[in-house]
Image (cartoon, rainbow, N blue to C red; front, side, top):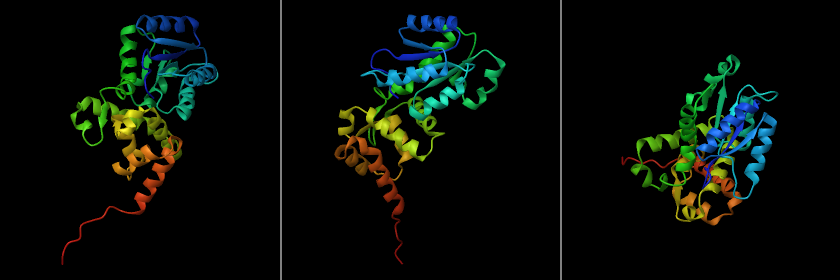
Length: 249
């Protein structure tokens, strides 16, 4: 998921209209584009519509956990099925909401109510940073760029990629690889360059596809079949182990 080229768009989900309005005003005052929903079903539809708009996207979802019907955790799981790389931050001020927080694995993905702008904004910035970095300073040429990046940038990109695939099955991982490939600028793909996040995802999903094979598929095959072709190349690579040096007798 890449942050939009201009203003990041955030979907705020809360069944309390006053809280939705307060968060919206906070975010708009800091130059975010804000959409709001009052329940999980409406949030799913708003995300679908937002993602389908020409040139549009949803860059992050900020959702309450204690929603009527579909709760925030269920919403997050549903969003991940279609948009695995979409960042989600959960919020709650109840004991019930707090009880499931440890399953998120990181405080960066959760904020306790009540909170201030100073509490919220750093979490948003952190969640959006890996996606934004994939479009600028974290662009790297194969085999050279990552070494020149800061340790923090590499760690952030690695964490983003590993988090994106942590709970995905085989099919979903290849679908995510296809999606991230499509998000790479055409000029980068033609030049054989990849964002750091995509390079990490590639190493997880298609470890047996060499640079030359990868670049050939991306340049010469139809965009809609990239994942299929890379998957085939990876399977062939698994059938032919790396050659080993034979010792002379």
